[in-house]
Image 1 (cartoon, rainbow, N blue to C red):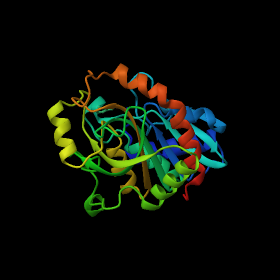
Image 2: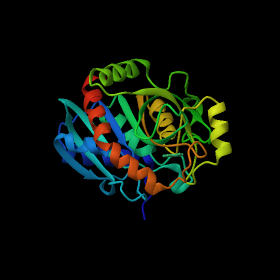
Image 3: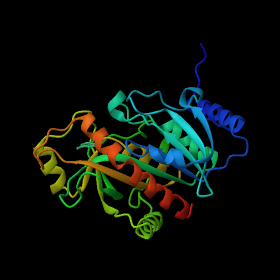
Image 4: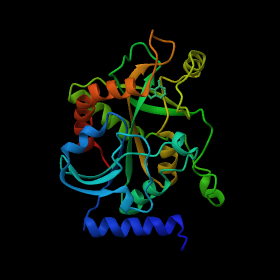
Length: 275
Ligand code: HPA
């Protein structure tokens, strides 16, 4: 058996993409989380490549995630959609998306738009609301960069979510008549939901949303030199904030009910970004 390095697997993935979609040159990558996949239907000239064909891309566990790279255009802008991610709760490893993010960077992407489903920590952001991520709290205190050599891993995170992209996204949402909140996203490992005490802690710490993904990808993207834009779909109020029990089925149900709005938001934002 031959062992390949991550760098080898990225090069193999790049070659496979260039073979299947010659000349494709996306500047923007999107990672589509729960509820956000509807935009995939709005891609012109779509070319699909299964993650299984791309050795740097992750194997996937959660049902409902396609595990497909879709290349094409949205509103005339060349994009690369990652339909499915590998969150750290699947493997205990925060670096599951390292190869995929680096392949996008090698493909020429300058920016990465990360999407997720999250719990709301604010009563004025009810289930079905959408939120622009202004910053994050890495509650898990894990990193996908621990094995990076030397000084390159000490990346600055003081402007993790690009201010210009945020302004452009907010303006595009407003022009489309879509309400877009803004707030801090707290990353918890999961897969269990939080306790009410944990939700009170997160609110006291200054978070407006809580979820189980995205932050490792933001770190990877910043390390790879990509600008980041983050969007959350709030599928529920945090544990203890409403008389409810939380479940993955409930999350997916709200995500499906909000999918058309999320697709409309992305269709408005993607062409408006200066990437
Ligand atoms: N907590 C963590 N992750 C989530 C939630 C939640 O309440 N809802 C959707 N993803």
